[in-house]
Image (cartoon, rainbow, N blue to C red; front, side, top):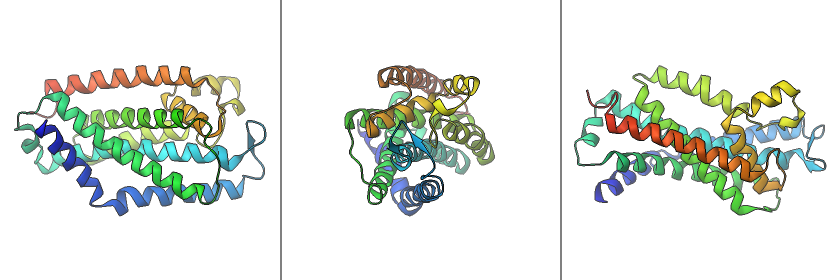
Length: 251
């Protein structure tokens, strides 16, 4: 376990040393989103009956911040190691591929949860509300960070340059996140668009997480959790297979 713990500690320390950029900046960005949307259109929009728009918006922003930062942690770390050439020092020790995977993904979970906690604490100072189902919220937060940390690892393995990784994040991760119901309920969409949104796995993360905050959702949380569990399992199998084969790592 020494190698795993050392790599995990190194990955956590890597983002914690620049916490102003990796923790504080996403919190400030989320607060800006909340301020603009809650004050600009909050009085004109209601979701799920009498639930205020700000209460609807906060869990979406918290989850969005967690997803984007969990993805960024594994993907940026791996691509930096590949480009600078120090990846060889991580591959030389007798680390099993599953230990490599666990260290990177768990560090991404730590960063994602740290950012999520920061956004949550900052937002409840302005929009306090109760958590009717905290265990559901915690469960979806963990699954979201695990899923995006794993996806970030796959993207970091695949990418050879920073612009490839930026393209993956800008054209896949961000659109899927913004179109997952962060700012709106999918019930407000026309039939075809609502059906299309259900093909987005990020929707189930945000919808299930929101249920933990406000007790209302578009889909039953058990259904959302089942879909996310299956998606995370598929990504985990793919990531482990890539690590085991040494694809774009050992060359």
